[in-house]
Length: 232
Length: 230
Image (tube, rainbow over all chains, first blue to last red; front, side, top):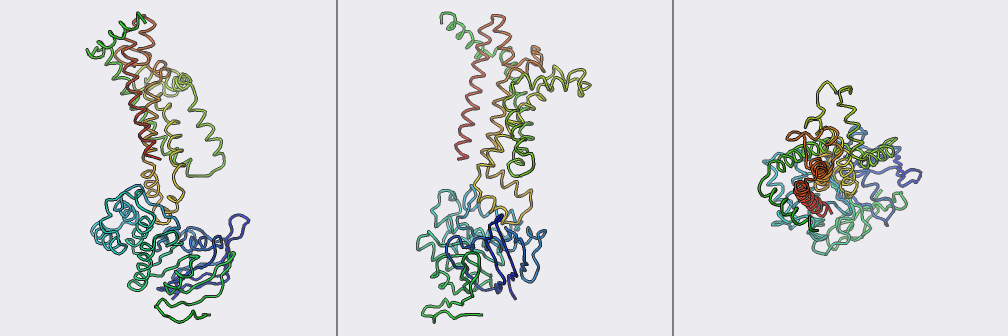
């Protein structure tokens, strides 16, 4: 089963072509990485996978279902995207999670346990009453990820999730992403220019350059793992 | 200066002695201005948000009209409202002319563009990442609007305060639609104009001092809200 199946997808900002993807299949429950330099189209592709953008031509299937414009709002509820520079609401950390809970109508009875688990996972226990705008970059990034995790998405889309972060925050985020994939079977797609991160996560890597995808490579996350294997 | 100091002293006594003339005008002013500003914000804030969040043909013309209506002299707004509720106007049968309700209608017309403009600016000043974050949650449009209002809450509150600042301080609408009827439609501003022309400088000064205090409170509130919004 593929989480995403793209065929002949083209996307342009006005007359400026940004993406041209003949074919892409992202397997469900796996970690996939879009690797390439800044401006190569990784973020645009990630926004397309988050149903925040719509391609001008081609087809996108999500878990077998053809993506149609009238379904975008509902499909967005099944994915969570961590923006490169995430926005936190003007509230406390708990308040930020609360906004997400209310937006998705999560029952009150479940909110406390979900929030506690996500905050603990990301090393943020005790941060509930901290003002979001007073957090460091690494803390803010982790809160934004916690805000996604409490909604239990089927797919996590991460745009440069650890760039410009301190080592401790980056490690927390990597561990959390791995745990989501391993324990919950969440499909993860990350966009990154950090090849090392893609390798550490054992991601299937697609190189993105000038809006086109290269061949996929499979990496192994285990320490001392063999060199990457070319995949068809 | 020789006549000002005794007048100021007399004005002070009128204020602290709870002179009914002063306090009745103050009460009418606060009541009419507050209602006009609140109703203006109820209409103006969603209007400003809608303009800020949408792109449509003629948007520039709407913005131009909004800015122009903010700069309209209050007597011109009063004139429009008079044409509406005057005896021969379309709402003439309601008997609103020279009543507090009629004045509220005029203040409402004055407040709408101010509230809309402040709300528009508050939404346009929001971080563009907010809109992406909200959209990514896949919630309803109403819920999205609620989240935008929540994030722009200081700007929205500033819209209400600014609308009140305009309605409490104006004289044209109150004069034309209220008629300055003592104990009924006389406001602080219309009373100041009348009493000073009659030579009752002390009463005018007392009302002026009260109005100044209200204006100060309003502007401190506006300053605090705008600082919080940043």
